[in-house]
Amino acid sequence: MNRRFGSWMQALSAAVVLGLLGVAATCLADPNEDVGTAAFPTLKLGVGAATVGRGGAGIALSEDAYATYWNPAGLAHTRATHLALMNNEWILDLRQNYAAFAHPLNDTTGLGVFVNYFDYGEIEGRDETGEPTGVFRPSDLAAGVGVGFAVNDDLSIGVQGKILRQEIDDASASGFAVDAGIRYDIPDTPASVAATIQHLGTSMKFDTEGFSLPTTLRAGVGYRIADDTAALALDIAMPTDDDIKVGAGISYEILDPLVLRGGYRYDFGGADHGTVAGLTGGFGLLLGGFVIDYAFVSLGDLGPSNRVSLSTAF
Picture 1 (cartoon, rainbow, N blue to C red):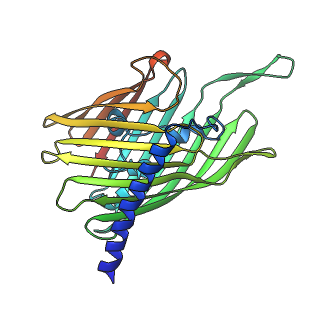
Picture 2 (cartoon, helix red, strand yellow):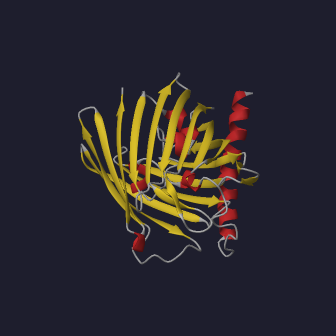
Picture 3 (cartoon, rainbow, N blue to C red):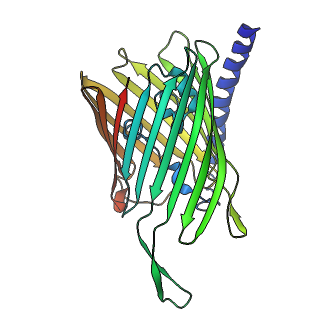
């Protein structure tokens, strides 16, 4: 029975990934008419400098505390307690902070907890006549818990729930969302395929008007080579409120404590911010029992985004 279930799930995971890739190919020619209509757009900002520096491609490879963002199925592959912190200095005065914890419950199950906070900086409010009403500081907060489970040696699944709160001046909204993911490690190869659905949940209601969340479908592949000293990854993201996005990248360990990363992100139908927009890069450095990761994402004319992560495993 278990073998039959595992075989069925393996076939299902491959079908899901191929189906999402097919949907993406079909939609490329049709721009999304709902761009910018969802609440909580900061949920779409990738976390973890290691994955972001690799083009934001991570759902098939992430298996540490950052799997709480990319793919909860990766929590099933956590082999040590992992603590991770990230700071993202985005454009203007916008700032994101992410903290996550992952712990293996046994050989097949891993648990993850995370907090994701986004600060919009100080904004001067004005009334209907244009008169100043004082300074306020909008913010987004998401916090949740997830679990990943290995069905067998090749297949893992995961799910997590998260509470959401958004504050804008004296208005606020709360909600709840779930993420779910699946990952299949292709037998006798260093390749993995994965699919996720993110931010599926209740609408965020300010006063009487509700706004949907940026529910996102992702499909990805990952390939580890040379005894895990290098990795290649490709992700396709299909948000309900935005155009399709593709990210791809590579990481390579040039020395025992040093890893270099590079990648590229492309938004189909997005605004043209210059030829370098979408370039990503960074490095990881092992110092004692800690790993420091840095990543930049070129936003073209808007300038770069810089992420720094600190993590440890014990």
